[in-house]
Image 1 (cartoon, helix red, strand yellow):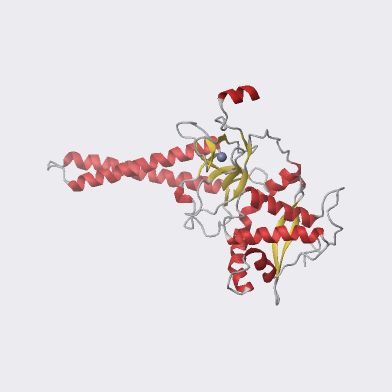
Image 2 (image 1 turned 90 degrees about the horizontal axis):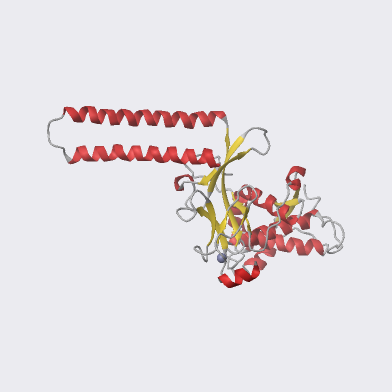
Length: 349
Ligand SMILES: [Zn+2]
């Protein structure tokens, strides 16, 4: 059993020294779920939040931090008609499925709070089964990263979830991170090359054949021409996309590469954490809490108003609460004066 950290008995919240591992880990979970506003999105997140919150309470009171399905149900959905373990089972499965996607966000949250542990979900089968949070210590590299301190009207982005790419890409890539080695680089290049040759050949064929035909142009000819133009357009789009990705290292992920349930997902090339010199492609969804209204800030293409940039827009006031987006420092400053009148901002400056 790897629950040594969680069964420590604690003398209540201590004012001196760092908090026990399990309290730190559970507090990181609470902060992450609150910050990304996931806690009120779906039942499985409510279960995670309840588990984390009660873990903090119980650990501080020196009680066991193992929970039964009944414990969790009474905190989340007391009046649900299903019997507790039947109610929890599908929600727990969902949480297990999503867990690999949270790591980046949990690490980021821990760094922001100055904690050195992140939570991992655990289950001890039995009758009844027990559910608990395990504390996992962060690697020293991860805790040593400096946290920029931002002014109150700035935002701090949390990588909310590394979303899984669309199922057709690869079933195994559910963590959303694809190692970007030389092989993949060459195969993408090769595919594009082949596609380019085919399209050029078809265009040439079309002109060569077209010049020999003396009959009037038929609707069939036109639709073939339209199809070829469509391919040329698609090819240009792919070139443009790859050019942007290589130049800027981060772009909005195309819809066809992301699952239907995930939107505002970015695709970035970043350094591989474990292997030196190795790059990886990651699907990440950043979010922040809007300092003006508390709404959730999501990443969008800057388009005409902010050319060449990705920006964070608040869901509640998408045209006004707009922030810059720095994917390295994970910070953003307001790009439009947040609900202040010109005289107010003159006074405050
Ligand atoms: Zn807002």
